[in-house]
Image (cartoon, rainbow, N blue to C red; front, side, top):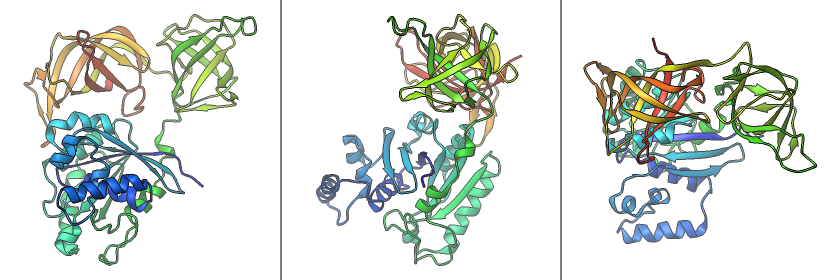
Length: 420
């Protein structure tokens, strides 16, 4: 029996062993090919080391291998008989915070690594805070390199207490702390005999068993229309369907629904997929919805329930992570905003404060955001957005800002609510 796909974002400071841990998971779960292993063995010899450097399985860029660091967000795929996994190996350097935000935006679980010798450092706090801000439901702290302190319980306990003390200031619904050695494989796939004082499970066992089905928003039906299907053929001349993805909740034929922005109500006549009609579509399903009435609907419109619909507003309070190296976000600046399938233009009405994500303090006098900075901002859009707060619904509570001149994505954002 499988437990569904688990999306994991790894985080931690430089040299905490993220790439080695992922390499160990891939290797011990037999998820790599022989030629990949041979290439890594050869690369390890070329580097002059007397062991197989499993980190090279994930450090794909030449600059990463030469420097021994992770720069880009690398996605790795592996599976066990229990479930499938996608791991986003995100960078640890402070200048790549934006990459970590990108990699963690769709994650079910954040895996934060800490070197037991260094304890909880600035980047550990930064990544734990980002995981909390992005509302990743599950967080696993891996206290790594236990082999370098002779698997000492006191060393682990000191790091554990320090992290728990910091985590109490954050919103982390589910926290698990595991002592490991990614290099030696202790507590990664199998329980380690070197740490008899640890009574918990191995990391892979925890990842296999963690329950994520209830993490999805199955309460609020939201369907963002991406494309209107009107086939020009005699066979389907009466066919009019609305293609898109169910971003949250569930839809069934016979459900009474409301269309935004028009506010018209109708019923669902049917739900089609590439494999035929279905009796229900849930969050994440790409489907075509057929309606009983002929209503003017276009890309960017939303199908929801009359008694359970999102907020509709042009004025929103948001948290923004600024990602542009070329320019800063400043008041009165305008950008293109993409929210679900809807595009509009947005102007920055006010920068309320910038967050110091090391101390969690607010810098109230800030009026701009530079690369990797996070702040609370008030936006005004040219067209109404149909949104829920990010706390309630990650799918309809998130957006991106795009520079209209360069067409580059310059920010990711989370909607806190309607602004005054």
